[in-house]
Amino acid sequence: MKWTIIMLRRDNYRKRQITKQVENQNFNLTFFIQKFEIKQIAISKSTQLTRNAYYLF
Image (cartoon, rainbow, N blue to C red; front, side):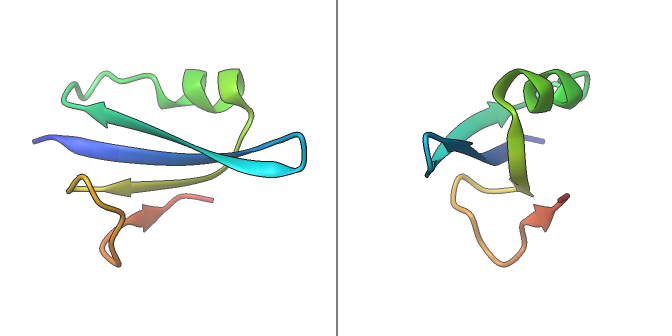
């Protein structure tokens, strides 16, 4: 199953969205959170962020 991870980070007082498509279950989400200093994250089963997205933070 393909997942789309939508990550929002604060960058110079503005929010920047980082979108990554994931097919591998071994995707290192913790690494991405630390690397990009993620403040808010959502995981959706589609390429669009919908109400079915799972907000982790």
